[in-house]
Every structure is written in C-alpha cells, then in structure tokens.
Image: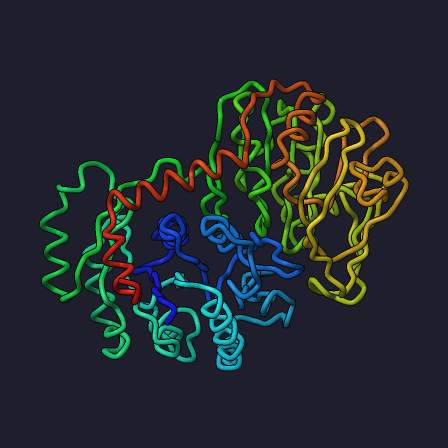
Length: 483
C-alpha cells in the first residue's frame, strides 16, 4: 500500500508548499520513492511538465523528490485572468475559462480527473505528499470541494493542519478550524504543525500544549522561520516585493496586476553585483535603472492598460533616454510592440490596442497555446539556454530579424536596431549561468560565480535538514502508513 499524507493550512500562505517540498526531500533521502500532489492550485507562476502546465510549487516539490514533474502532480490549475475569472488547466491542458461564480458547479466534474491523477501518482510511489489549498476553515467553499477536505475524504488521506505563528493568532487558527468545520472533516485531521516561529521555540511550549489539550490532536513540531526560503522559487505574487540584493547594477521590474512566471527573476536576484527592485503600483519606475524588465502576464492587454495607468510608460521612455536597457519577457515582450490584436476575444473583449511601440513587432492572440520546453542559443554570446514557453499569441515584425535567441536554427524574440530594447517568449533564460553572466556583462553589470541550480539544490538540502531537526518526521511517516 502506498503511504499518503496531506498538509493543509489553517489559512493561506502558512508555508504549506515549503513544508511539502521539505518532506519530499526528507523522505527521498531515506530512499523512498516520493511524489508530490496538489489537487487544485491557483497561481499564474506555472511550470512546464511534459508538454502541460502545473503550478511552480509542484515542479519544485518534484525536484525535491528527485523526479521529473508530471501534469498529474497538479491536475487542476487555476490561472486568474481578472478579478472574477480564471483559466482552468486540467491535467496540464487548457480546459475552460470561467467566472468565479460559475466554478463551483464545475468542481464535482473535476473530482474525476483529480482522483485519476492521484491514483497515477500512488501507483508510482512509496509515499505521496499532498498539499491543500487555502484553508478548510473556509466552510463557505466546502460544497463540492476538491482541494482540501473534499479530496481528503474522497481519497482517504490523513491530514496534518499547519498554523502560521508569524502572523499571530496561531492558537485561534488551529483551534478555530476544528470548531468551524464539519465533525467528519475534523476527524480527518490527525495532528498539527506550527510554522514560521521566530526566536526560541521553547517559548511556545505552553501554547503548543494548549492546542493539544483543546483539540486532542498530537503536535508534530514547531518549525522555526527558514531564512533561506527566498532562495527557492516563490509561487504567490504576494511574496514578491521590496528590494533584493545590494549590487551596483539596478534591475527594476514593474509589479503587473497579473504578473506571471515571476521566478524568471530569481537567478538575477542572487547575482552579487545586482540589485533587483520590484516596483509596486503607484510608484514610478526608477529612471536610473540599468535594466528594466517587463515580466510575463496572464492578461497582456489588461496589464498593458494597468502599466499605462501607473504612468510607467512615461517612466520607461525617460529611463531609455538616460541609457537604460529594456527586456520584455513573454507578455512583456508583446507589450513592447506596436500593436496587440485579439480578434477572437481570447483574453477579453475582441479588438486591438496600441503597444508601447518600442519594438517594431506586432502580436496577434490566437486560440492555440504554446506550452513546451525549449533549448536555445544566444548568438551574441554563444551561450546555450534551456527554458520553456507558455503563451498564446504570435509575434512578428521587422525587429524579429534581430532575434535574441535561435531555437532549432530559427529566430526567437526580437531586438531594436540599437540593441537597447529586447523581447523573448523564453522563460527561465536566466537560470543558465553562462548566459546570465554574459548578458549582464554585455550590459555593464559585474557578475559573480554563483550557480543557480547549485543554490536551489543546496537550499532544498538545508530545508530538509531544517525539517528533520524540528519536525517528528518519523511520526509523520507512520501516520502516512509507512511506519
């Protein structure tokens, strides 16, 4: 029998994804065949898995488990396109675009592929570590649930509930969850964890005992704050912000309302010569920036309007006059062109809008979606790059004659004649150490010797050490059915 364990949160952003990644590495180091699984995820930070899409967190968890990512690790992925609607990805493929109010009636149908994918993961593994979404305490969402207790009961998976002490009120989070959920749901919870403790965990001994006494659940540990979490790809755009690094080379990135695939930026933030600054809405782009990156977007036309509403188009033009370089990634690349057309209303109302006009290209949105891993060559440096593409739309024009990359001998991306404005559909380009260093050097930035892949691996190892030091992993393994 395959062992199974589900990590649910008493609230959003309590650290479920990180804990699951840590457990995947812990158990994989013990020689077990491990698979991560998340029934339903909501994120615009997606990864490519064998031609389909899954949440970035599940791709990281797969890496922690030492296996290739699979679309069955995250069978339902919701990618928000507006405040009220999302694209629904099922087992890696685009399935529908629905309004939030209509999604509830679709959930019972989606339980079928969820359980199918879960069965596939169980068939491959000694243990499957499942991550919930949001919180089971959101009882208004319980009907037809496929993400938390609905899944746990349908699949018969024991649950460990996680509270976040850093935000305060962790006792109420955990005890309160038990009090508001259905008793049969509460019976699925077999213990708890307290996460993100700062300081001496022994100071929480009385609170920890209170939770045990009030709920009747065993505790599996108090996990101190993991300071190196920022070295791993983040899934939630809410985790972005502020400034990373203190180098002389300033990279500024506007925080678009539907920013997507923002882990593109992580390798840059780890370069010692770089300062990476996320610019929130309402603040100007710094005209003194050396490089401004327009990131990916889940709703390019809407985010272009958002970009202009902040006055960032004016700031961008001023920065260019002062000598900045500009790079557009995926949706950001589309924005840099002369026009974006959506004749079939794929992203929203049908029509065409003027782009920023900084590249002599135009984009037409098309129904077909390109989702693929990509090997490319950067002709200016001779460096090889491995990345991925997730986008709708086809882009062409005069500046495509100066491609940023070559893919299978064909041009990819575009560059203005003076070389100061560039665009590409290739995500993950900066994970390639040789290309990243060459690119920054050509722009005048100082580079170090950091290996991004080595940093991620070292951080996963440190996370597993952290978990083993503070969590009763043997008891969790026994609870899962492998003790």
